[in-house]
Length: 72
Image 1 (cartoon, rainbow, N blue to C red):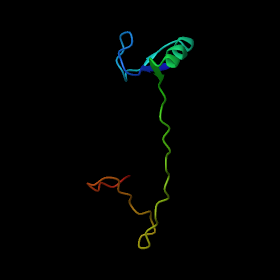
Image 2: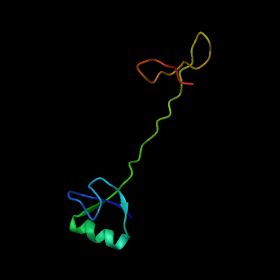
Image 3: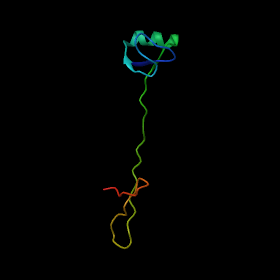
């Protein structure tokens, strides 16, 4: 199980540093408040349908950044 120290240094690991620990031992330290389980964030991907240009009949370009470089 991947865990990270909560407040203070744990063994040789600093807070925020992830490491593997056996599940039973990790659960005991989590209950004691010394460690917390590392969870991976779940990102939702958004698929947008491109607009169709009336003039050309092709999809309009999608711009992502301020410097206006076109995608694709």
